[in-house]
Image 1 (cartoon, rainbow, N blue to C red):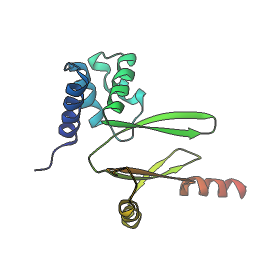
Image 2 (image 1 turned 30 degrees about the horizontal axis):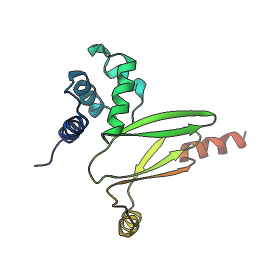
Image 3 (image 1 turned 135 degrees about the horizontal axis):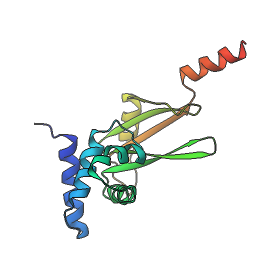
Image 4 (image 1 turned 90 degrees about the horizontal axis):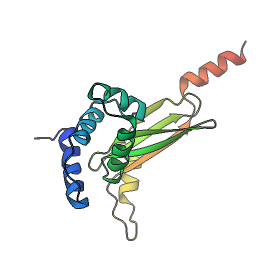
Length: 155
């Protein structure tokens, strides 16, 4: 039977907490449950909104996210749009391969999977490194932004 995302991440949190000498925290578990329900990727603000009814402060959410990044439960993705940098978070799953196309104009993220690219990367041997998962980001301009630019140029 396949484990749920919450089961996988809860096991990771328990293992990391035991290794780091941290006690179980109901607040961490609540944040973990909420972020597993969010559409991926998510922002700190979206997670804070999801945790509002549990009265978890934004400072606590930032601290828990930092811990979850260290525990490889989530990974942080820095997105640059113009002069602004935005941090998004995504839950990590075992042996996960993520391929994303990111529009540099509007920030839209589209997921895709290319088996040929995955085969090439997995077949590659890295000295002193054992590949477990990877994320590929492809930056460009989405179809909608390209169409909008074309429309503006025709005016």
